[in-house]
Length: 401
Image (cartoon, rainbow, N blue to C red; front, side, top):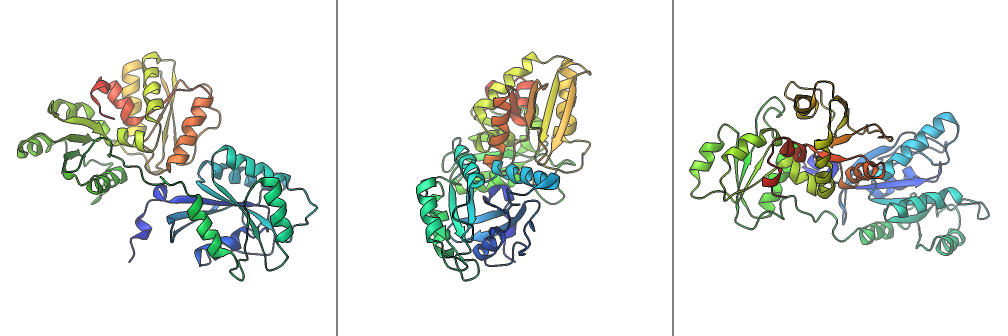
C-alpha cells in the first residue's frame, strides 16, 4: 500500500475552488485529480459544506483540494453555506476562481471580484478559470477578465480535458518558491549533531506509536543528517551517560520541561517539540510577547486554550488538564479557562486575557497564522503550550529557539 495517505493534512498544499453555483467547480476538481472526487450534478447548489479530497499531484506533491458551495447561494441555509465557504479562505494556500463560459457577458461579476480581492488581500495566489469552454466560446470572457482583473485567466473544459494540463502547470508556477522548504530544527542543528529526544510514554502517547510532532521532528532531524537518540524522562540519565559527550541539542516534551532542564548539561541546548512548532507553524515572536501577559493574570482572568486535536480528554491531557491546573495553582482557583478544539475558534475574542494554543501540528501554517492574526487584530495576547510551560517553570531564558 502507498504511504501517501500517511501524509498529514497539515503538510499538504491546500487548494480551494470558488465560484457561483453550477459554475463547474466540482467537475473541475474531478478533471484535475483524475477521479470522481466531488459530486457533480446539473442542479445548482449540489455542493453544500466544503468537501476536501487528499490527492497527489505531479509538480505540487501532496495536496488537499477544497470544493466549496457557490458564493451566490441564497436563503438562510445558503447564507450559512457561504459563511463556511468563506471560512476556507483561512486554510487556502492556492485558489481557483471559476466563471462559466456560459455566463452572460453583460452580467455583473461583482461577487467574483469581491472574492478575488479577498484572496489577494490575504496573499493567496489565485488563478481565474473560465470553465465549460466546450459549451460556449470562452474568448470574450477571457478578454474581459484580463482587462478588468489584471489577470491571466485560463479556459478549461472538464468534459474534454481542454486546458487541464495548462492549469496544472500554472498551479506549479504560482506556488511560492519556498513552499514547504522550512525545517523544523534547521536553525538549531548542523550535520552530524547528536540530538536527544525526551518523549514521555504516558496515556497521551498512542499505543505502539509516537505522536505526530515527534514523528515529524525525527524525520526533520534525519533530513538534516543528525544522529537521533530517543529516551523517556526515566531513561534520560542513562541516555546521557551512554554518550561520550553531551548532545548538541535536547528536545523534550513540554510537560516534563522542568525535569529535563534539571538534567540538561550546560554544553547542550534545550528546547521542546511545542516550542519548535511555535516557530515552524506559528509566530514565535508573538508567542513570546504573549507569554509576558502571564505576569498580568489574576484570579479574575479568563484564558482560552485552543487545541488542533479533537481527541477525548485524558487524565494526563496537557491542554485540558495540566495547563489549567498549573494556571489555577499560580493565580487562584477562580481563574476561568475555556477550551476549544479542532476548527472551533471564536471570531470574537474580547474578554480573554490570554490565548494559549497548541503547537498546531494538525494545522497548516497558514491556518494557524490566521488565528494568531485574529488575536493580534483584537489586541489579545497569544502564546503556545511550550512557551507558556517554559515561562511557568521559570526556564524560558534557557530555551533555544
